[in-house]
Length: 567
Ligand SMILES: C[S@@+](CC[C@H](N)C(=O)[O-])C[C@H]1O[C@@H](n2cnc3c(N)ncnc32)[C@H](O)[C@@H]1O
Image 1 (cartoon, protein in one colour):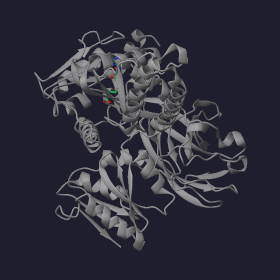
Image 2 (cartoon, protein in one colour):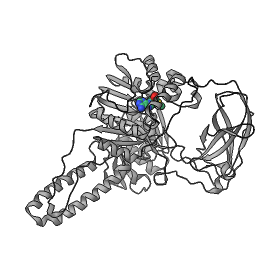
Image 3 (cartoon, helix red, strand yellow):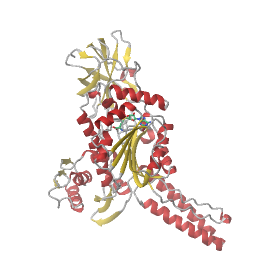
Image 4 (cartoon, protein in one colour):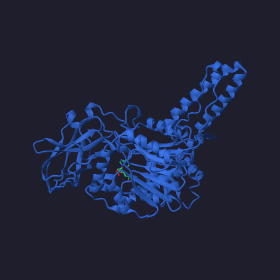
């Protein structure tokens, strides 16, 4: 879709259902969002972003911020609480008109319509912070890639750009840990709606309870990491009374708890009635996303006749606007950022485009263009290109230091080689080291965004390491599940970690049941602040001992009963 058509679509969204088109929760379709609640989601998001960046040691100067794809200003308004000046940019004039109506920071907040495929309305190095969420996914990669380059151009050196974009469907190579291929025999369910449905209002959302029974001999998996990817999911279609499909995809609820063969659970499903009055067949079925509906594998669906009254007027243009969805693979984004003069500090899981994999990229811009390595002796036939910085994490990561050292070593060796060709043998070794180290860093860097790993053995099978570049963490060296990941990657379950950093707020009381070493208790303790509290409960005496050490080591118990460990 060209930008002109994209603009037309978003303009219609802005005219017809602006808040829902930003946050597409089915309950708030047809202008049912309460603006106060809607804007509060923006504040929560931005507060969580800053808490997260802060806890990872990333500092953001607070001068000027850009919100790209701002729509009605949900996030721009929230950013205004943190920056001296904010600019919101959107392609849709109807969105910008509303954003100006909702603006509570006149003079500080500036909204712009931009229908170009660049950001030439801003000079280089203008912003300390560039933010974009739920935007780049709605345009073709040819545009999103250009905007990402532009983010880096308009970013000041030392500033931070944080943007989200889906990377693609989870494939076999990058499946999450709860990846589960349902065998053919598992596609058998029995579904029932036990309470008769009332007459529904056209176009209105409605929640029904569906009794779902696993009628197969295969256990359906539970969600182990809190997200619904790869689970068995309840969904529905709308059919005419003659059985012709009119709406293929409507509601979806994953069976988070899993079901054993023969086991049942009552699961809520949000459906949206068709927009024209009439009699319809609501068809309920299970689906394994990206694989098949159960009906296609011979399972029986549940069909219910539903009366729909009233009707919903169509959009003024008569043509339904479309929200496109596009992805850019993570590796492409990392390479693009680097080639545009940026440096990726962190890549975080983001679930805003489920079931697609989606990431938030935290990027900075440096003036620190490393000098190219000295050309090596041509006699040696060696060419070492240690100048290309790889996308590894941390403001000054161990990986950078190693590369820097090796680069220096290579340069030194090159000079020596000019004097003494006998050094060529050693240079070959250096080149091998550089290549191997780079491969290693590349592998680690791609999926281990938080750097600064170290561990010191303390005796008694306990080591001290550091997590998220910040917190001290004692670990049990005999533990082979969490400990290796904490030591190697400095974090545990990145998606749960970023979720926790997003939702835990100052003043909250958090209960961590089965706290283990206290990884999540420590994070929560640091985030609830002096008025909050964390109850960390751990039954295993050995873990409990380590948990106590971690609470102490991070200065949490000392601060007005913020975190306490119990067994
Ligand atoms: C789903 S909304 C997200 C709004 C906002 N980022 C938020 O999360 O509250 C997507 C917005 O991106 C805007 N948009 C889409 N393509 C754009 C482009 N090429 N340039 C600027 N804005 C664009 C749309 O007009 C729409 O307002």
